Length: 210
Image 1 (tube, rainbow, N blue to C red):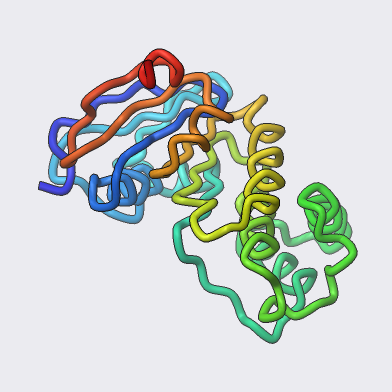
Image 2 (cartoon, rainbow, N blue to C red):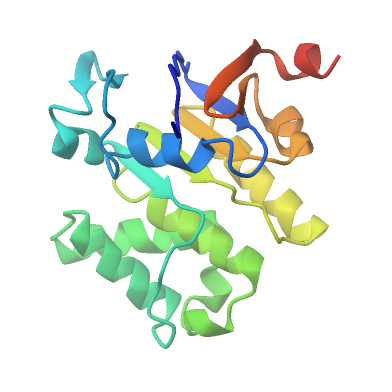
């Protein structure tokens, strides 16, 4: 079993999911994001006074979701500005003036405004991850899932990315999946440890480390 009797309640703010490679983190993230259908159980998101059943209403959950998977594809020769505009259309922002406002605001928020016309192929790993967060924030999501976002980043880019996540996580639910202990302790008020597809501990990061 990839996941075995996983039960979690995730509050608003930054929630860490810590575990080694192969523990089931990405499977859980993909299942919550409605990209994999579980063989049993339920997933419910409470947002804006309503409960969304992710398995019965996947489209309703996707409308509230921002997702940064471990590997995400982009058109390499397209600029950051053009690509984000294209993704905003796909997320349903059809009106051009509103889309321009959203796209330009997000590029500034993730500190990519100065390189907005640069092709994505020329982006560093950290710049690419910040672009990934920008696309995840289109449409003001209530749930943001980031899967192993700092793997392979140098310390400076990791700090920059984590600061950005901390800022975002003040108002919405952010699930951070990682195998890096410092990412969880630096950012998350609550966390769970997953191993072998099971949740083995849940609590406050500093308590679990102790």
